[in-house]
Image (cartoon, rainbow over all chains, first blue to last red; front, side, top):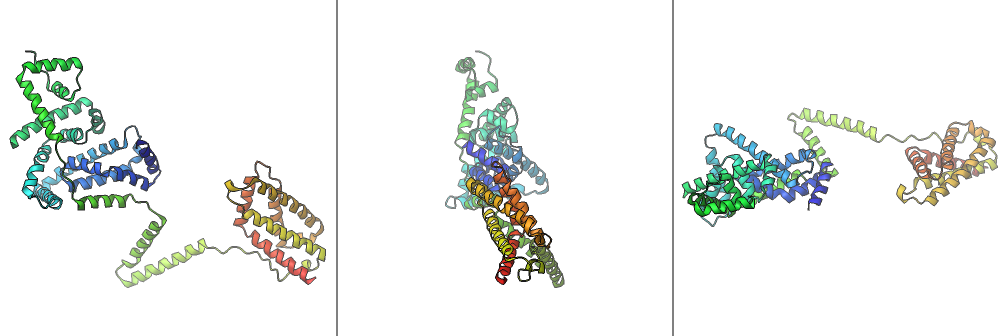
Length: 187
Length: 264
């Protein structure tokens, strides 16, 4: 699998967009899901994930194949998600009803997803954990998401986040403590 | 009761990242410390919640839009796609203009540019000024034997040139074919020296002298090619013939001598 990736990467580096297209096909869902875990809704996750692939193709010459291609894509996704949150913060000052639009997006998604269940039920079930995740700092959230939803090792997370393994452990430990508090409050 | 381990140590204990002796120490401590036991229990509970979290699936419409966008962005661009893109750009450039006069002006400008480019690309091949139907007086004064000699020489040269031009690609060429072509070139080269000796007036007749000099030059290159360079030399000759009108000229000169021989 990795050998096949290397061949496709070599071809893509030589300007073969189709070869890169095959890599995109292979990892598009993983990147969309990571973007969702970091952004909190699929509309924004879709935009972030698309930008991840476009940016990764532009910067492919800088990929030295010291880590796995997916790890490199994860690193770009995390950086793009950070940029996205920065922009969100700025635009929140401009748009007062930002949260409202997010809630509307969320409802829209559920409506399309499963019209048979009542929206409120669905929201209650899935939004509790999503809701408390949003309360974590971006670093804590990133480390937690990579650890528990994408099953990465501490070393891989450190590589993706560009920090020490001890820092990752601290982020996750603090995140678990914060999540506990928030879940208790909800209960 | 021993002192409570740090939160980091407790987390490492849950993760199983501790050294065996540290693990044992914490395990011993947990037996006697309710607060730490509760802490560990809570952390494990949160971990369980996280591990059992089900990510909502994206709507089909969103997933399709996402996958389609990526597939379009990273599609393979064919020559036809580029052509379509160019046509679209040109169409937009001409027909998206508001006033009709501007549209017409743009269309005319494009037409002129198109003609100029077309003329540059499809330049007429330079044809030699050899006219087989009108042989010069000097050629008319040649003896029948000389005319026959020249007809044979031109026919053989034409066959040799055709053999070189139709030579297969480099990797598929049979070495014995190359050597055979070289032998023919050596024989024809001998005949060119006879042309030089016996038919002096042809050497002084333009544009025939130019034509014979060019054929002689190619024959000389082919005849002197060593075994290790024969492939390369043949390929060069092939390119020279293809890029010039030599084959066409040979055909005309042969036709001219055939007409002369019929006259005699």
